[in-house]
Length: 291
Image (cartoon, rainbow, N blue to C red; front, top):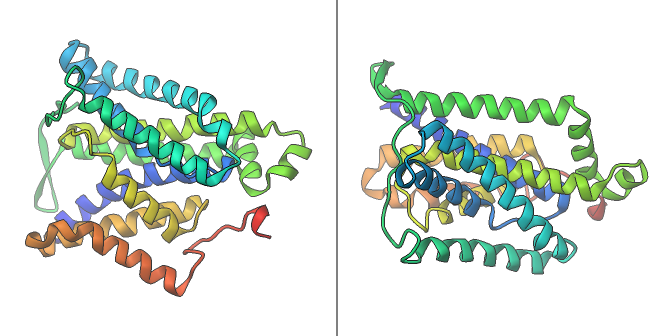
């Protein structure tokens, strides 16, 4: 059982980490709480199904095309809709929630996917034995890709000029602008990275999950809990929070199978307990408007 908890918790936490890091990035760079974030995650999974199962394309090519397509759609959405309300936090919340619901309703249309539950085939088949339990190669591939992408994102943010621009904009937009950083362009690039991370998470989850037009809701609640737990705008906090709540969910499912429906509630209870003790979260970040 312990081995199963470790493996499942790592994969669940890793996928949440991809989503939470992207969510934190766009909040830091553009001060937008993007409630449509996990709708892009869902869109990537459905596009893989469309390309692979309906159009008959190679599965790997379908994954690549879906990530690229969702990233482009995300950037256009940011430029045409979200950026126009960026300075109005409440309006931005409503607009991004509306976008998520629109995407959901499109998926529910009879001419699209309807309310049917769908499956995407695995990229790799077979399994191996780790610590005495069977682990499919798809699970191993998922965890390996999560690690590579998270390390690549860290390298981008810490070792490149673009990363410096994103971190500077997140810390203080006015000072970054005075230093010659194009904050508008940086915000758009950050949105592209954020949506790409969500699309990758959707691509990794698609072979492991059943697709439904409501599959964006639970991850949205979880990543909001994660970023609040870790501290809004903190990448480190998002990573730590993702694995804490990912393992919390997994423990509930394994230890209390009959109460598996409570897994989200337990994760949220952990977040609330931490917030009561430390309101800014585990690794809270102070932004210029809070100083």
